[in-house]
Length: 256
Image (cartoon, rainbow, N blue to C red; front, side, top):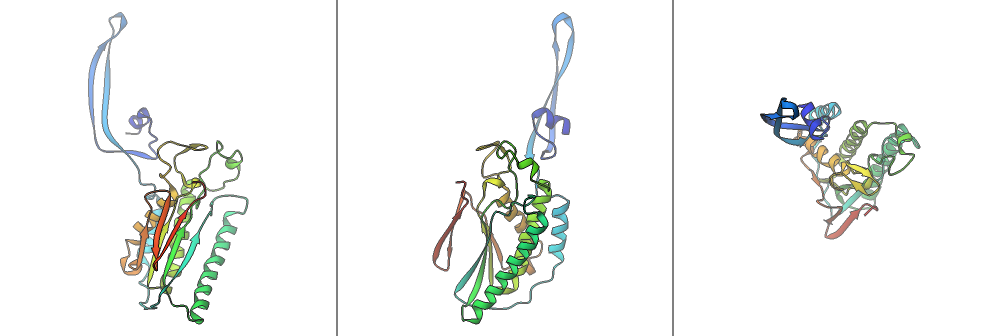
């Protein structure tokens, strides 16, 4: 169906035809008495799952094989919030390798902070992992003129790295609380159908920042024994409001 999809204006790398294609043909008489056969095709076009690439499958297998976390009950009345913001993975300026190393430090700092708080009597039983947008880099030259020269990972590689970093975050916090929540808001660098500054092909909510959360939820569903205490909350709009321990909390990305 690739040729048909291209004829309809769809990139076969990102779209597919679901089910069958109905075809019809008819004869048309052209100038000079010549006849030609015309064809028409009708089918249902849908976007391919952007999560189901080779990297997704490997991460899915890894998550499925991981053993259950030793059950513990921490108890308490306090939530710890950990924010994931503006990774913009793939950029050369700080470098992908340096970004990953710095993030590992941030994760360990968070673990140490939770332990320190517990030592002074703060009873933490919930951990919220909040994505604040721009986790991956999808701005084009029409948006920032230097962008094509400053990105060293493909989008698929960026997405795979983002998912693995989110899953690493979840695995790090799993033993440390009774309840974990993965949530967050979409950013401008995550707009997956960006056409130019302020312009998109579909919707500004067609966004990789929230897509990463949804795909990580799908990955965790493969191993409910390990990830059963993790819930994922994805907003329907640009902003997310949540009730945490009776306190109304909200987050959004600066572009809105």
